Length: 140
Image (cartoon, rainbow, N blue to C red; front, top):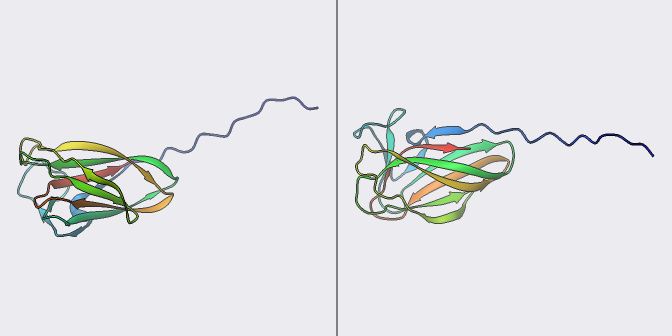
């Protein structure tokens, strides 16, 4: 019988966060705008009606729960929800995007999603006839 110390495996590496400017993502029914100040990057994504979407691909080194931070503005007085799909499957059918008090008042909303190791396609789709302005998406 041999006695000794068992060394536990090292913790998984911390995955760096990745920020994607919404205006550089794939946009369908969404326009790149610069009218309302306070955005980062070269503009923001202005969602059109229901069904308009922003889609981005992010790579993760390991599978598991990951934060998704949405920086958006909603100058309206009503919720302008979006659905969230990951790799073609809707994982949150209605995420509230409440009013921010003005189109130049950017706020951050944080969600948690399960992502796979490798490339993940994330799609944010407007549910209502009026959408929000999306500045950036930070994953991780």
